[in-house]
Length: 381
Image (cartoon, rainbow, N blue to C red; front, side, top):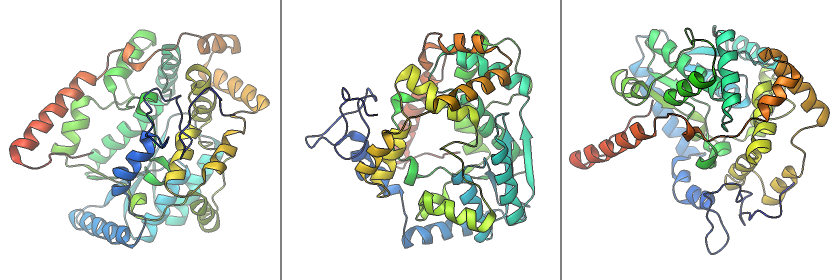
């Protein structure tokens, strides 16, 4: 339930659990105002978006005409990537379809992925992360006490995807990221999952074995090698169509036999636990708030509906107990050891080595070069 001591935005449901939130004279938060003034200008859920997307696809097809695949698509089994796969198929796109198995897939996620690739008639390439290394890294992150516990999975996903794309000569990465459901997220709650410096620093302090097979992407690979040398670009097609998640889910059920998860991120037991228990318990962060706020500013939900959603409990006691036992067993620790780890001190990512200095230096150089040439220099991989 909404904590009364927090000040809440008059338009959405973001509140002062985001320490950097600000409010205007009408009580509307900076997230809503930024959506209106900046973010919404990159969102095209209309005929204009359809024309833009068609042009993007045509350009992609032209540049990839001699290749076996036009792009690479990471398929997690979640609604976003699954619906995106369906739309790519209907648009006649030839993707290299990759699933990265980090060890936490639910059986239902595996079934949904199979249903999608069978419907589309595509081959599926599954990259299985070395579980012993993933387990060690996952435990290291839990012991570090930082907020984003999904980094081991997320970094492995994107690193594997980019290495695999390079291996197959693919230049376009198709992402299910979208502004309809993810336009709002407080930067104070998170840090980039692609910070390999941070990942290695945390693992060096709390890990017990070397990461020999776990692939990472370094700072210069991420910001220079992939975008400027390998000419890789990310396309987010869902930003160019009217993406309403509830309607997308029904279409997936009807066309491919997709099965709905009991809750958001039900495709991964660990992600469900991290978002619905770890973050609220250790940091007071409820990730439903930015998600619901995104739906509000996108016109897909009213503020009253969102507030009612927030009144629902994050976890059923029995479900939480079962998930804790499952995760402890999967990580190879006793229930008691797992509880001890959960009670270790919380930390910020910045308590460990990270890429902040490199990033800030790069942004200064980018700004200088852009000013010198009289045009914006950027390429996002």
